[in-house]
Length: 273
Image 1: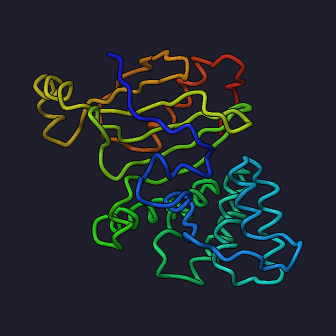
Image 2: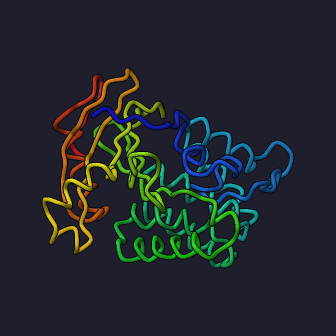
C-alpha cells in the first residue's frame, strides 16, 4: 500500500517545519529563542546570527566555531550554549553536545525547549538512560507544560551517520496523520539534501484485522507496524512489517538494516553506528 504524507525538505537545523507549524524556525528542534541576541562579540566578530546562518547553510563546524567564540566573551549566554550543542549534535560530537546543553539547562532551567536539545545530545553520547528521561519529560511537558510545548508535534531523538549520509530520527508525541506515523527517519546527503524518508506507521485499518488474528497480543497493547520508505523520485518501498510496541531502539535497528539492504543511488550505507 502506498502511503504518502507531508514531508519537510529543509536542512536539519530547520526540522521545526515538520514538527510544529506555529513556531519560528529552529525552536522545536534546537530550543533556540525566537529572537536570540546578536552582535555579542563586537563589530566584525562572530555573532549568534552568523552561527545560525551557518547552521541553516549546513555548515555545523563553522557554526560551532562561531558559537564557541561568542562563549569566550559571554560564557553564560544561554542561546550560544544551546546552539553550540545543536552544532555538536550535527557533527556527531555527543559528549560536547551534552556539555553545552547541560550548561544551557543550568542557566535557564525553566526553558522547556532546552530538553529537546538534551535528548539528541544524550543520544549522540550514548547516554540512553538520560536520553529516555528527557523523552519522558518532553511528553509530560507536551501534556501539561507551556502553550508552545503543548502545540509541538514531535522532537528530534538523534542524528546518526550511515556511510556518508546522515539520518535525522524524529519521534512524535501522538501518532501523526492518516496512517498514524510514530517515527520518521530523514536520510540526508552530506550537503543536507533529503533523499529518503522512512516512516514507522500503524494505521487503524490494518490494526483491526491484526488484532482480530492476535487477540492476546492486542490485549497486551501490541500493534502491527509497517516500515515504509519514500524517495524524492516518488518511489515507495515497503521494507517490512513487525508486531509489538513502538520501541525506538528496536525500530532504529530495523531502519538501519533496511538502509543497508536497500542502498540509495550514490549513497554509502555501510557502517552506521
